[in-house]
Image (spheres, rainbow, N blue to C red):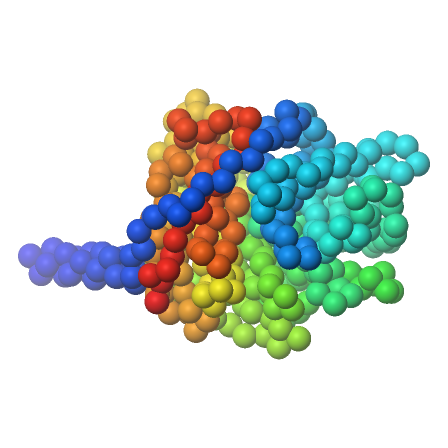
Length: 383
């Protein structure tokens, strides 16, 4: 009897923690944006970047070299005029070839950076003319760069920061993997690669890894930057590391345990099992800094049941998502429940009015494949 009562108390404590998720914000649409797409770029794209250039907001969408539809294409969308301005196809063969591009960063129209994955790791500097202005081919064959949309490179001063990994550990099945640096920068003037040792894998990641448990495909950090400040986080940890001018600060976010990724005891080389665990379980994802309200936002994906024969490409978009808003001390100040099957969480852009959220979800009955569509939602009541 006492054990049952104790168990009920513990469950209620965890439940109450989950219920007190700060102020609840209503999903209130201010306006909608609808942008006509070029036929060649209709496929779902997760690798994106939003950038204000000379007073105009642009959305850049990139398709990597593995695409069967339009490999190595960069689409430039003017969000202000709501139109596609240009699609640039980067050649994979010939004297001006870009080899196996997996990620990108737009600094401005004269400085666009790309990199491949490895063997050898190569960085390219180009512009909208797609002429290679500079190329850095890294001699160390043991350094690779990540392809994840959540780990895209970014430029601060003359340093291009990127998610780095050891090519000896594509699948981290050795204990020394967890001691490797995962964030480095390319010094544009010298071409040198410098690892950053002030950030490392979360303690929970290391402890579970040593004990034979694994967070599927979560060895990649989640990176975000705003001006000269960067943020580093992971799916399984409530901590976010902020780095500015070499100074590192740990921010512990107020997040209940139920919102963190769960370790599993499965073969880390078993693609199917890792996929179902990653997509099926709840997890933290994207980090966004909102400069207008000075808040950190984290995307939370709830757990879902996955059918055995369900399409792997689209099942993620069937998940239920929430946005969690934190002040810069880590206090949870608000939550926003996003409508199910209505949004694409890969594109969430803070604006003066609120948030611009992409609605191109394969399960959205209002979705039009000829258009890129957004809901502009209000978060004025965020305190």
